Image (cartoon, rainbow, N blue to C red; front, side, top):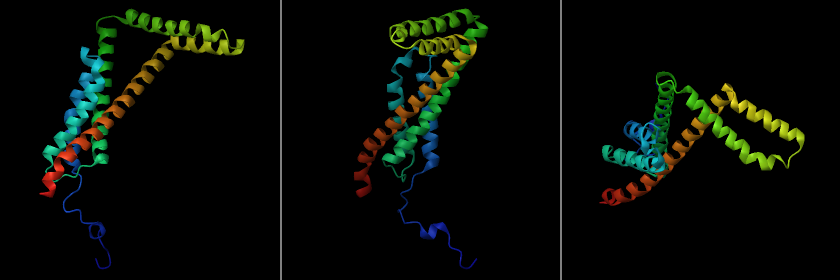
Length: 197
């Protein structure tokens, strides 16, 4: 058609230096699954999840750099690769944790032990706040007691589980994003002499 220009005609020439998202997403997915497994409660290694997330995102950036010979890598690209790896890891870790909880609750019949543990944690929170509650008005104390009664109900326990899972997932995505940015900083600087030569 005459008079219709394509977007490619107006795009600046980058000399083949664009982000190869096919390689970036596959690298993030490949590394994100083990990151999620190591960060879940399935393995006893979950205490080092900060290391798995940052190191895994750096590994995803390195894998992208290795697979995509002409791929462009800057801080923003590394951050995005890390974020995708973090999303995959958070999804996989949450699914593993939910699976373990369902297995313990229904197959191993540990419902009472799980509920008692959650009740103990909630009661410990109430005891910690006991000194602070003494300094508040009676109306505020009544609201706080109603809130803790809600937390001890099945709906409250579901609310606590959901919010803790969401908070953990957001933290995983944040740490993986930081790891991706750090990986981009490291691996992009290593590649510069190869591009200039």
